[in-house]
Amino acid sequence: MKRILLFLISSGILVGSATAQGSTKPRMAIAGLGIESSTFSPALTEEAAFHAKYGADVFSTYPFMAVDSPLRSKAVWIPTIVGHALPGGTVTREAYESLVTKTLDSLKKHLPYDGLYYDIHGAMSVVGLDDPEGDFIVRIRKVVGKKTIISTSMDLHGNVSWRLAENTDLITCYRKAPHEDATQTKERAVQNLVDRIESGKGKPVYKAYISIPILLPGEKTSTRIEPAKTVYAAVWPAAVQPGIIDAAIWVGYAWADEPRNHAVVMVTGDDKEMVTHTAEKLAKGFWDARNGFAFVAPTGTLSECLDKALASTKHPFYISDSGDNPTAGGAGDVTWTITEILKRPEFKADNGPSLIYASIPGPELVKSAIAIGVGGHVDGYAGAKVDARNAPPVHIAGTVESIVYGDVDAEVEVAIKVGSVHVIVTQKRKPYHHEADFTRLGLNPRKADIVVVKIGYLEPELYAMKADWLLALTPGGVDQGIEHLPYHRIQRPMFPMDKNMAKPDLSARLVPSSDKL
Image (cartoon, one colour):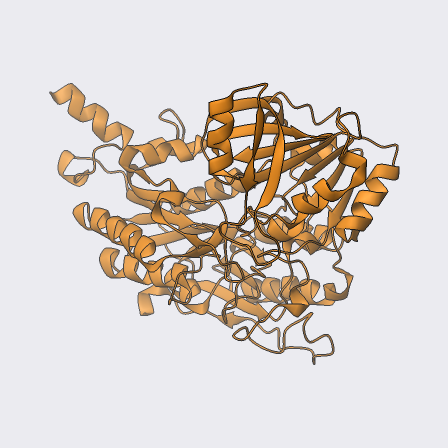
């Protein structure tokens, strides 16, 4: 029994009092919910979409928290609940309250805490509630108290409200888009927390905050290209200066209509002059570059993109179906693009130009395909159950090429050949970011003439694979033409909606310590 008890304590699974067992290690909680939610999509997100992990299962989310990792050995870890959902529509109030209540109940059971790692995205929208991440951290503070040091990691497409800035102590975000540094960012947030507690330095003396009146889609702020490449290249050297703990720039999230949706710079540290000067320098760099931000790829209407792809000798030719990108908050079931593709005469014949389309949800059609089997002819409809604003369900009649079970998002995937188009139909919506997403269905994107994906900027594997690429300006819940979206609540003036606005005050504001709240 004693041996089992010692194992549970050392592994961080035991969530009782480490002090009572003679441990001198700090006690650290882990909690967080992450989703990007478009308020311009009719979709709603339920609790199951978060695939929440509880207790010791939380550790599997973080490679740097393996049993034998240095960080794991630094503290007695008390994981509560961590949930990450695919981007989508606004979260129902019931789902939010359920997950938050479960988290708070878990935290209450295992008090006290020296530190807490708050793992969020930062762009959650909840029915009837502004700034959910700010609300959540305030409620966490009421449980853990003011002395607990909270370290927050975020997506650079998240939103940092003043309330969130006040209640967190250490804060950081990704420095790359696409987010190739997501895991490193989360590890940095945890390492910063451990370092400040181990050193006895505790909470940073200063937190500088600058609100920047810029709101841009991620497809115009990829760090692969200028000017975001240079803007973000300045973050790492800024963060390693003496007297600074971390520095971060948030682009913000463009497809939600709340006052907190805008760019932000935050710098934390113990040297007041260095912290404020660095924040102002980073903010100025972002503001001065504003007119240079452009789409990460050449753009056009879907018709223009298809015409160019068909005329090209470069294969595979990728086209981003950007307006319904499920990884930005689109419903994922807008049928407008696939409907237009299937109308094209070039794709009517079986031996026409090969095109892979990923993807469209159609649970009834998937069920029919399963009943008919591979090689059989299936005839039915898919999509537009959630977002039918631009097109009704699409008619798909073709040969079942493959059926794959067990995907964490799609659950069941079916490839159906219609003419020369390979349409991927899913039981539930799913993003297609990896080559294996296609090859497991028997499809070879490298050999296809054209690949159309519901995505914005191409994720790394697709980007490396493409011979050419266009971003189609298609309709949906994450329409790239944000200047024309019906914003009513964002702060104004805001660039680019107000292109001729006066230069804003980009002076750093010092955020009060969470001790003083």
